[in-house]
Image 1: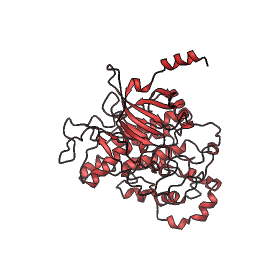
Image 2 (image 1 turned 45 degrees about the horizontal axis):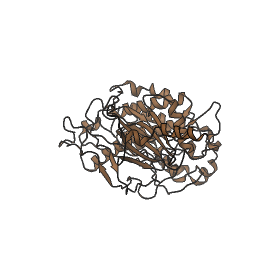
Image 3 (image 1 turned 180 degrees about the vertical axis):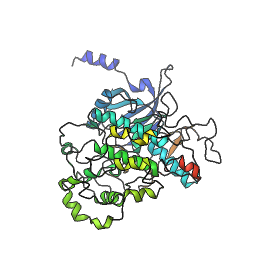
Image 4 (image 1 turned 135 degrees about the horizontal axis):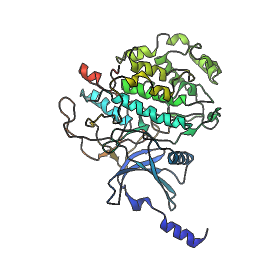
Length: 443
């Protein structure tokens, strides 16, 4: 390259540090790198942004895929990539994306803490329905464009805070997304292990080579169940292993303990699964005769005749060929009964969640945590707890009344780290509030 041209180009190249303030504003960390809350140095631009720094030197394949896809995709329920900065001096890659105040992991975690402290938190009755509807709409757009997300979980489902898109769901982290074809090509040749364990479909655990968009639907079913019950439905304590073998005994055991052992009449192709031999060797059908999704959800007062349960059962069918599609899900009677889903999942009510916290440099977040984005293998220690990091609050939490309701006019928000644990719980003590809240009944 001509030296003078190279110098001129370097002088004209936009630098992230010249355009945005982000020092000391780290809000996320993981195997991919770091996320910062950023503000433009242009006084006329008052918007808040998120800057995602890709770890390492240069562009990884995951970063290339994410950038290439996000540049092409435009949908209200997908995170919007606004610019890419390449720093040639230190070979860093920065992604400028819209800033979302919340994510499902932190939202449900907030309710879990409320339950532990026996505090009531008001949630609009239709909030879970609105969240699910927008997730499905975003995935419908991806599937219509022949794209699998392959890493859906609460930590990757963002929700916008105060602003023009208040309460809108944004699906994030496209690092594992892939184009797929018809007829299907064996994507498993390149990626034998995908999707964080707790949200991984049974066909993946049994070594399916031609997996389809049904794997995203299973993950959405897991998220829906978690919203309804406040517990990760297929929570499994797992060792920190890195293997290309998709078969995982403990995760299958957890699925069977909830769903029951799959019958061949319900899943005709199960014999064709590469790991079917190990399945029949390691498991006995008789051990799961008393297990069913009906019994599991009944513990959380979700009855089998409710429309929420009926939709959930369609999302969590063991046979991927029978699993409902995103298009069919959006037409389900669950979304046609009151309360109808809204574009603002908070339905205009004050947002009770605390603001996102900054991470300090000595934070020690566990990068191998089971529910953290992009991790194909999982954690050691107690999966019910997130990383114990030192944090600095961006703003003090607002006062809460004795009923657990945020006081009038007090709104605060919480942000996520793109890679997080996913165990959360919720509670409300009065029967009426149980009808209107997370983890409770949605007829």
